[in-house]
Amino acid sequence: MASVIFLCVSALVWLPYGLFCFANPAFLVEAAGVAATSATGSTELRAMYGGLQAGIGALALVAMWREGLRSSALVCLAFLCGGLALARLAGAVLDAELSSYTLVGLGFEIGSAACAGACLWQRRP
Image 1: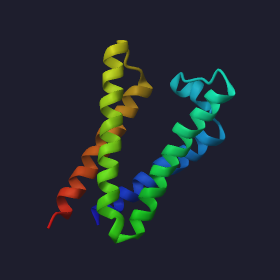
Image 2: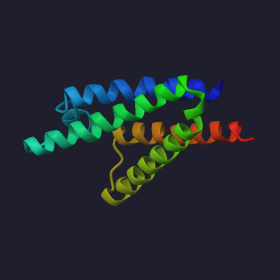
Image 3: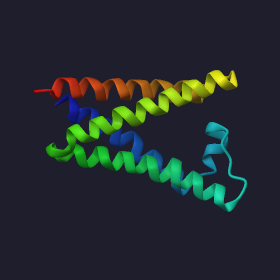
């Protein structure tokens, strides 16, 4: 049951945020200080902040309903969120800045990686 709740919350966060960023990549200028300087840059923001994040949310949504996909989705979320958190933390150290956006991202990513790991641990035979 914990896995289903975690996947539901993940879908509710990742999917709408990804769709919003795809539709409105200029939002990232104020929110995260990320701006596109060309059409290629805008496409990149739509792909990475929009498509990738919406895809993560869609994976969580499908796995929430399909028992056979749950463990794979949890492994995926653990690695993706863990990788995001490690890179974000390393970037903050290298850039010597820890903004509120970065802190919220770190909290969400570390929490998600830990929850995915805990759900996997609970599911072990």
